[in-house]
Length: 309
Image (cartoon, rainbow, N blue to C red; front, side, top):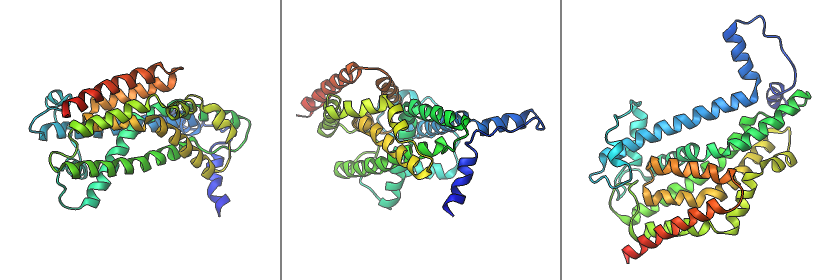
């Protein structure tokens, strides 16, 4: 039964050539997309990232409009943007995420909504930085496919990577509920000010200088050796490999995600900045980028902590 389930995955990734000349132009284009793992994965990831940013932008616009005082960075600009047309279930999702504290109604529903929100943030800001790793896997897979060897589709690797960030999203959602339950007032996704905001920035800044941060960063910068050494034709092993790569990425970026508490979890401007910085940090050698970011965060943290004293 297991071999029968795995066989279609292997079949679509072998080096067999097929003649699509009997198809029309649209059919040949669709067949080439289906046969090319790199193109398929690129289109799927691009669509997922674009959809995540669209939903997050719509939520950010809604959040800016519901705040009495627009003190989150970029609120003034978001209020000039029109509300994006959305289905009813997304409006309900927004309402759960933007609920005021103290919490009312079903905490379970709010928790699930916050998990979904953090996961969308991870897809939007962190998945682009995993593109080099995914491309490396596709190149190895393509070489094996040309030789006629069975290959697990790259989307299985992507699924494992996202599974790690889904688990992390649950932890960030729990932290969000805890912080705003203690705060006792304000909108759920407002910036955390004072002592709590300063501590979040302090932790993020100090982690930029840590050895663990650099160890995880090195793994993210050099995925080829890891992917090649752990190569397998079994889908569950490739899925596990994806979760491991996701864990290295999480090790690089979890502290940066804490910055979102200080600036507002729905601050799409800072989210984009963190996403761009993460991509640059993983693609540049040395520790300069990490240390500059860490120094900025520590100065910012000191300002908040001194102001709340």
